[in-house]
Image (cartoon, rainbow, N blue to C red; front, side, top):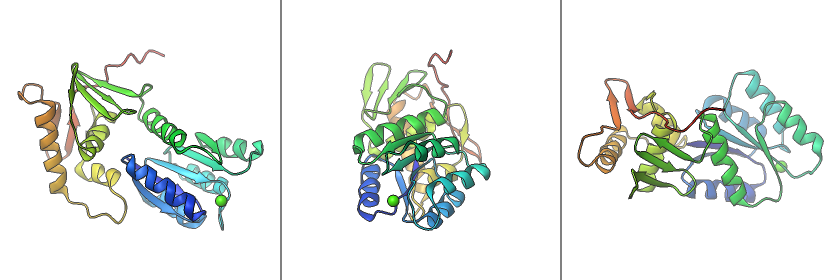
Length: 230
Ligand code: CA
C-alpha cells in the first residue's frame, strides 16, 4: 500500500517515512503544500498523512482541494497545536482521523492500518477469505489453522489482493500501489511473487486462491468471510 507523507519538518518526515517503509508501505514524501497537493492528485496513493502547518499551501487547503477533486483516499492529519479549531476544520473538510504532536509512531502505524482496512471495507484487523486468514497487525498468514511463512514482499502483494478479494486487480495497479514513484517496476518480479504465493497458499493445487483473469490481472477467489452485518 502506498502512503503519502506531507510534512515540512525534515527530521519528522524522514522518521515517519522510514518507519512506514519498515512496516511495509511504499512512501512518497512531500516537504511543502505544493508538492503534497501534486502528489495527492497525480499518484495512486492509498492514504495521506498531512501536517496542517505547511509552507505555501496549508494542510486544510490540501484536504479541501483533494476532496473537491474527488480524491477519496483516507487522510490522517497531524497537528502541533492542540487547538481544537484546526482539527475540527480538517475533519470537516474530509480528513478521517488526526494525531496531535508529539505522538508515538506505533500509534500512527495502528491508525494507518485501521484507516486502510476500513477504506477497503474491512472492519477487523484479520482479513478472512475462505480458509485463509491474514492478520494485518501481526502480519501473519494462516491457512486453516496452519501458519504459512511469507516474506515481507509476498505479504504486501497478498494483502493488496485480499483487501480487494473477489475483484480483479491489474498488474499495473498492484505495482503502482506497492512501489514508490521513482522505483524500478518490473512486472516479471510480480509474476514470480504470485507464483510463490500460489505454491505457499495452495501446495496441493486444489484451491487456486489467486486466479489469473486473462489479460486483466489477478483475483483473490475467496471473498470475505467476516460477518459484515452492521
Ligand atoms: Ca509543520
